[in-house]
Image 1 (tube, rainbow, N blue to C red):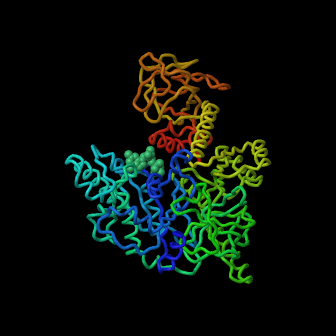
Image 2: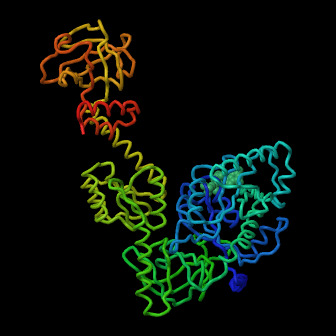
Length: 603
Ligand code: GDP
């Protein structure tokens, strides 16, 4: 009955706003959602990072219950809140329906003890790009020194009743966060000091642990939505519906979870949605919603509906959903002759999203289960400065391996498929093994990243071992006057390094004597102790051995202490340094490379 009431309420002009929670890992996003939902999703999450998207409908009755301690909060005009459970990176705000964000308002969670962190800034940038308004939950206030919790009171009163040093610490942390927001070009204030919501971003002190401030947070979300977003939230019959997840459910077959932001879905509707292998046209065989205050993905009995009106999270039953693509729009065809046009529309949306992704000439091949997770993974790779040369959605097929294998011709480190939350076809796996393409699979972005980084590190070590004897570090040096200890076979001399780095194994030449090959540095000593490397201004004693196949050279006859000696570099040796030994090169060393390149006339 209560649900029926909720359904009736939404016949008011306003729909429920769609809310998403964002922020750095471990700030308490899941815990805040838990508090709002009274459920315990956090304990079951893979690796503690929420990777999938779910939605919870918070009806007015629940809002009233949770905000009853808040002073000055009376009227609720919206029919409820639709809260999206935000995964680590793949945020709902990143899913777009025809270009605009589907998230009406965001809660940006900041750990008061840590302030702004890298992903906080990422979230801010994403929210700005999508023009999504947000408020800040300044979470974990219970960790302030000797904090006394009082979750049944307004948090403003609770702060007032703290001891002086607790209040001082609170104010100090708040000031710090305000400065950090200012550095991002944002004006932030504590919510109870903010009387201009259009200019200032409100920060609500919360503890998802003790419950302090949670009522204030919900109240402010409701209030901000009602006052600032009323226009956007006026209900429209124009369908706006996004596929969040495609899931196989035992007994139900493959279903899609959608967020219905505007309009309505009905039993029997002809729906059109994007698929991995082209558009899908099918009929709604069931519209399911969980009990209020439960999340779509938690196992619980669903209620069936004949019609559902926005905004709601809905599970749709229909045939042929196996290849549906999450992160795209779901459309309803009112007449049969619309179907072809709508098919073009949904596929164009996917094509456009994929087209807007810039690929590099060299880089890994990236594959994911949904458009949203693909975008999230690519964003992550971009931040981590890992280039990508190919993308695909859906299971890894033979053709994906073939595409990735092209990199073997250029650079093996990129002959890699990063497969996020997708299956690998057996045939694809076999071909990959034969060709030498590595496939990494994971359903947590970080795990995929870590596995790839480890692979790169191993590959680099192998290559360094393989090429070390061919790498030539750049060096300029001269014989120190009166320090010729042995003039030939082998030459033993004291030298002064003028630039770059001199290493054992470096081939030496005399550029002014027509690049005369002197030999190879066999050993090096400083203060009678053997050393591997000598740098600028260091004086070391070196032994120069004959290069194989070269006639022995003699100091005093072929060259002398007035001549500049250099390492003998080549195009190939420079490439080796660039590819595998960057960490062992300093800026000044690259400068020497530039000089020697000119001298040696290397292009
Ligand atoms: P998420 O990664 O942002 O989703 O963060 P979680 O909700 O998983 O929380 C990370 C850790 O911080 C968990 O151990 C939580 O129990 C803890 N935590 C979350 N909120 C609070 C809070 O308000 N106070 C305290 N003391 N711990 C919290």
